[in-house]
Image 1: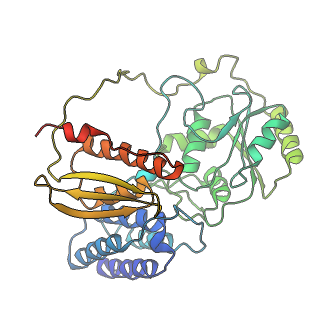
Image 2: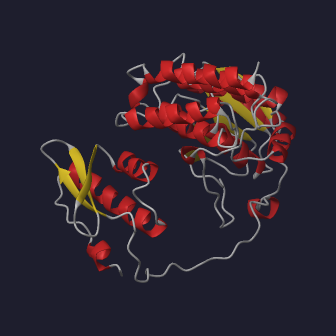
Image 3: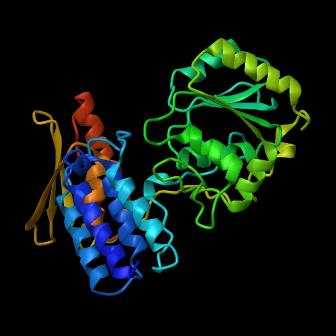
Length: 377
């Protein structure tokens, strides 16, 4: 297919997603639009210019995000993105980008698990890890049952960052030799089937899980070597759809007996979590310079349940009024529109908007911190 036709079909697919009312309020579409804008930045021509103009218009027309993902099947933004990637492979010069919402940090203190998450660690020296997929109450119930051989249990609700976390936590613990997948599949994401596909097939050159039925099975926080180690290290047991704690516990014990831990008693000695990095002691901020884009006044409105943000220039002229339900959405809007140009200013606004959101939700009084007014000119 010719590049122009690929881009025009993507424009049509994105228009279909934008014209779907629930998509205009969903983080899935917003993330997809931003990712595609950045991925196609190196593509030139009339069709690419038209695509970027459409994306800018769609972002401008998005409503306040009410949910990050509803698990819709089909997910129109994911359908558009997947079809585009399949057609653009080897045809268009696409950039690899990381979605801001799909990254995580590793612990640097030698502890395990190295990636934070909603897990229950039973015995880090045991050999069996359990993912309960979308069954969020199952980890605690299984941990209370305390089957012999259970190392860790937690949910895995997404087919990208959720699996990134599973892989990273497994390859940094050589005691683990079995991954048991149980619980109910997340609608649309199919993280259980994606884990099975990862174990069976690995990933392609773009870190897409080969054979995954998930919406966006791209692993962005692990390496190809991590995936190879994961596939060598653990046997994956398929109990997808099972919420029976007793059955899962019995399987954990059977697998632990067949594949006992052989890593020894001192886990950190076996685990190369990450190279030593410098530790920096946090210090108070120095006096900061004014953001050339202007300043903001934050005004929670408890009677309306919203936060109002007024944007001024340094002649105290009102430039914009932004309304939103939460700090995250307002911050994203300010940054996307270019109304914040300095990192220190963005950090300040994020902190103050989060305080405003907490005040709004809990009924606390809110007084904006005066640091912004004390900045140097």
